[in-house]
Length: 222
Image (cartoon, rainbow, N blue to C red):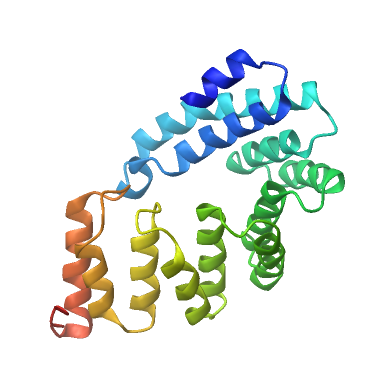
């Protein structure tokens, strides 16, 4: 990983450690085992990377305790472990240091959404969009949270504006279309999906099920 080399050359730069931890975190969350339902394999990935994420966050805090990223990274570790109170306390420290830090806002919205506070989570995500409107993973979560709150068209607008090869974009679009009863469009997307976390056979079967939704075949849109 390129960030490993950067940190090795600049071991005393806290933001580099935070970025390395974030890269490890997204490596876990985009691993194919997660979407393929391979629980044991995914657990091995988590067990391999979680200590690395924690070590990077703690190193960043040691180097610069006034930089919010280290506390934010450590908060994600505790969140993955199910330690929600500890995660919230660490996130609070990060937020106090910088209320407009994009990583902090992203994590704050996730913690609000987990117990069902979706409207509050969406308010935080709108603040995040104002601060950082271009990061695909942030935009993906914003679209999904808007969709969960019933704002289908707003979610579609964000997803359609993302790069075609953005991770999970195709599956997310298909999910939103299917929830609106637009099964044919959802199936078309899955059949034309670029290589990604989901195995091709899973996408193919999902498209078949969508075309036979409600007990009727839906023709392919050519």
